Length: 301
Image (cartoon, rainbow, N blue to C red):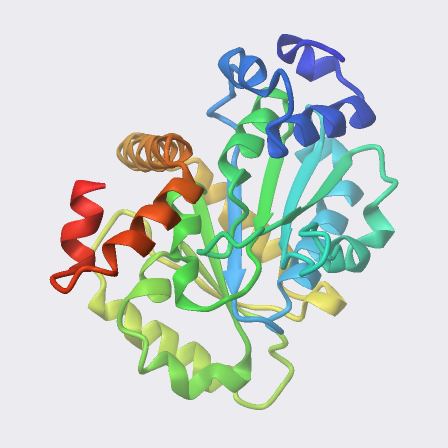
C-alpha cells in the first residue's frame, strides 16, 4: 500500500484501498490520517437537497462540463465525487444508486467516484466523510464534490465540511420554501432550481430570492440558478458561480470549518471510549430504582 505522502501519484485502485482502510478503521488507518497534508486550496463543493431534486444528475452534468474542457478546468488529478447513499439494512454498505447514475463517467481517467454508506449517521453524510475528503485533498484533485443522501433539513451538517454549499430545489417545492426560515435555507452559498422546464420554476425562483432578504448582508450575492441537468442547461453558469465563490476570501469561513471539524472529531473519539454493553447494563440496573432519572444518569455515567 502506498504511503499517504505519495497520494498525488497514487492510482485510483490504490487510492480506493486507502479510503477503505480509513472508512472501516482497519489496521493502520490512524497512521494514514496522522500523515495527511490536505491541500486547503482545493474546492470542496457540497450538494444537498431533498430526494428527487436531481442532485446526482446535476453532478453528472458538472462532470461532463469539466471533462469536456479538461485544459480549461483540470490541472491536477481531476474530479473526485463522494456520493453518500443510504445504507443497506443487511450489509450496512452503500446501495450504490448514485454511482450507477454517474456510470458514463465511471471509467474516465480524470474522474474518481466513491459511494459511501451513512451507516446510521445523521445529517445526510457518512461518519467518515470528513476524513475521506481530506484524503482526496491530499491526493491533488482539482474539484471535490460531495452529494448528501437527501434527508431534509438535518443536512445542514454539509455546511461544516464544504467551502461551497449548493442547495437544490425543484419547481414542485415552491410553496414549502416560504415555510423554511432556518436550517437548510441558511447554509446555501448557491441555490439551484433543477428541472426548471417544469411548471412552477419561476415561482420557486422568486420565493427563494425573496427569502434571501432575511439573510445577513455579505460580500457574496447568493445566486439562484435555473438548470435542467439532464440537458446540461444552466451548468456552465453554475460552474462559473462555483469558481467565483471559491475565489472569495475564505479565511473566516475556513476557520469556522476547522472549528466544526475539530468538534466533530473530538465527539467521535470520545464516543469510542464508551462501552455500549456496559452502558446498556448500567442503564437497565438504574431503571429498577424508583427515583430513576435519565438526565441525572447520563451526567454521572
